Length: 204
Image 1 (cartoon, rainbow, N blue to C red):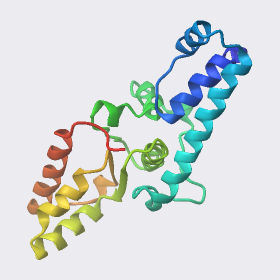
Image 2 (image 1 turned 60 degrees about the horizontal axis):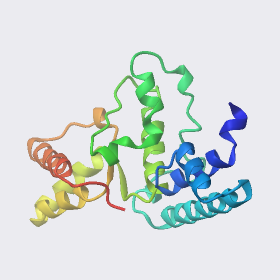
Image 3 (image 1 turned 180 degrees about the horizontal axis):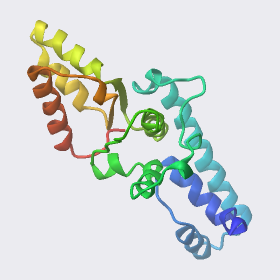
């Protein structure tokens, strides 16, 4: 199995997946067969996809709005999370988080549970992966939207604040359980979620 995963077909499909297009190893093999491509020829597109993915990742690291709010020193990643310690029916769902089905399927993801189990680690890893895939991402502690809404309401620009938070493909609100929102902020946060559910898809 290890040798198969490191085959030229798998390397090319894996590099393409990092860039965005979902190509299976079987599809790459069929493409190679149709065009009489050997291992050397397959290595060229794999290297190209890998280069483009890394270049986009570097650009995302420097420019996307969500990533600067995430820790750059010792960043939280999926590779750095020990999924083996997670038990129960949701362990399988957590293992699928790196696929980023949420933004692409236009679905919300909620990480719940007691403190200290790694919710913030997974949330930040999720946001980082979204940024590396070129998706507009915004990460905030739960008190920040409330403070933003309050200031915006005082300036008469509450709906503009709502529209701003509705734009990113991935909006991560961390530590929700530690905050209490008043009725006005609750209504505005609901408006953000409602608008995001009406969006057509990810925003690159």
